[in-house]
Image (tube, rainbow, N blue to C red; front, side, top):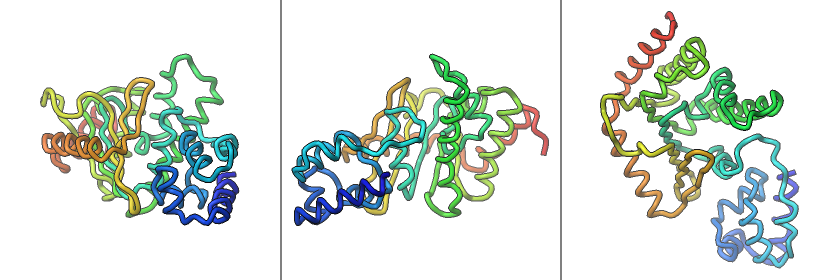
Length: 264
C-alpha cells in the first residue's frame, strides 16, 4: 500500500513539474523525506500529508488516503519508529527498561503485561511482534551503529523474573561481545546525572539532519530543531562521560546475570 501511495505522490509531483527538492521546499519538508515516501519506505504523518496536498493542490487526497500500517506501536512513537529504520547511527538512553531494539521476546512480553487498561492476548502479541521486528536492524553486522547508555536500575529491576532477566542481560552482553553494539552502564552510586529525567534516542542519517526522540509516560516527541537536538546530544555526551567504561559495564552485566541465576 505504501509503495502505491509513493508512486501516486511521484506522479502528482512530476505532473506539477516539481523536483523533489522544490516540493520539499513548498511543503516545508526535507528532500530525503519526500524520497523515502515515494520509494514506499516511509509513511508521512497526517500533518506532512496535509502540507503535501496544499503544495500539490490535490485537495485532501494525500491526507485522506494515508496507508494503514499494521505494526502495533503507540501513536506517539510511530514517526520515531520509521526514522529508526532509516538511521545510520542510534544512541539510546534507558532509565527504567531495556531499549526496544535490544529486548528479548520474554522481556517484551513481561513489559507488555504492565499496560493499563490490559490488552487482550492477541493485541499484546501484536505489540511484541512489532517490537521484535524493530530489532532486525541489528541483523546487519555494521549499520546502524548502536550505542546504549543504561541506568543500572535497568539491570537490577527483575522484569519478568530472574530467568527472563538473566536471558535479557546475556542477550545484550552477547551483542557487546560480538561488537554489534556498545553499552555503558550508569552506576547507581553515581547519584544525579544528565538525562535522569527520562528516555532518549538520538539518530543520525545519511541524507538528512540528526533528530532526537524523548519519551515519558504515555507521551513521546520527535525533536528536529537543530538547537534542541544539539542540546540533547550534549546532555548525552556529558552522561556518557560519567558512565562505566565498556569492559566494566560488560563485567557488571555478567555479574548481574549471574546473580539472577545465569551460569556460563
